[in-house]
Length: 197
Image (cartoon, rainbow, N blue to C red; front, side, top):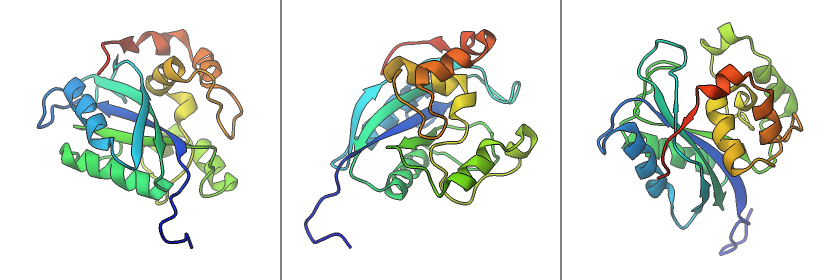
């Protein structure tokens, strides 16, 4: 147990943000920028934020295109505490968890928390290798870190490689820049930079 008055050491975390429906503060671009202001607190310092990016809706045809971004944070919160804060911000922006990959006013994913692998390597590997058909139907009941789909998603890797090209995946061992380069050009070409918040 932590002694009274002693603070946790700050840890670096990476979050991904996305939206494709308007929220109470406006269009998706405004929602993402507002979400970042809601996250900034005594426990969370926003260190770096990528450009906003326009990306095709996934799966294709499921709704309007998304606006996405990635941010690097420094936090004294535990991984669960940070995830809880992210969910509170989603709820504040009107997020309703109706379907696995449905349209949304705001989605904030905890992509990585330091070099932590949660809950263990075997469980991470299970979700890493889950077939696409199963991914659309099943979601883990516990926090999986790092996010098991980072290496597959251009809408994560393009902004991540922009702000942290040397960030190294704690399981796969590749940097953000290497993983981004490994994607098909057709995928990365669909991720179009917009302005910054």
